[in-house]
Image (cartoon, rainbow, N blue to C red; front, side, top):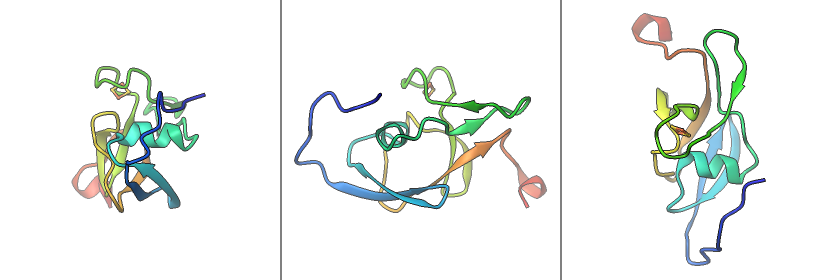
Length: 102
Ligand code: FES
């Protein structure tokens, strides 16, 4: 469904994980683009119904791309550049703060 518009042969390959699954992405891609390129379309669950949601606008407007990155929740995957070794996780419901996070 999603594929790069053109190949960037010179782009470095970055290793990252999503929910513990090792994956690779291209330097210069956002977290959301890297997830979509790996066939991952559900990156969060809604707080009310728990329904899966996927990146939609890819420009910071819809907030459907929220993920947990390196333990920090509510990160907009479409605005965060992918980095080597990132631990990305599905965001389940709302972000947890302080003692709620334990
Ligand atoms: S995909 Fe819409 S804000 Fe990230």
